[in-house]
Amino acid sequence: MHIFFLILLSTVFTVVGQLFFRKGMLDVGEVSFSLQSLGKTLGETASNIYVISGFILFALGAIWWLVILSKVEVSYAYPIGSLGYVLLLFASWLFLGESIPLSRWIG
Image (cartoon, rainbow, N blue to C red; front, side, top):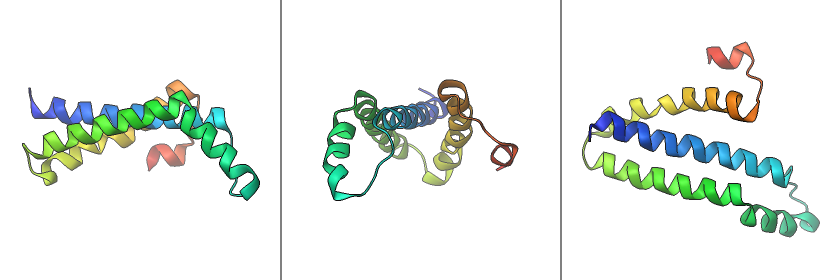
């Protein structure tokens, strides 16, 4: 398998994991650090299917990343993996309906 495809696959795992984390936390609601609500919030977060799926995808991305680093130098792989920033920008706009101001598009 071509190394670029492997890096892209790892990047996609982590981007989709981020989308799932965000969707899960939208379901859970804003996290408060008060002692009264912390236990309830942690329980809701830990049992949310989107958050769980996000962790699984992150784990797959990390395992895949280790496979990549066994094949190429990190100075080669990491810049390609940074495509994740751009992919996440588009994906959060497309799938989560987030508004992306011009300043964020520019960087």
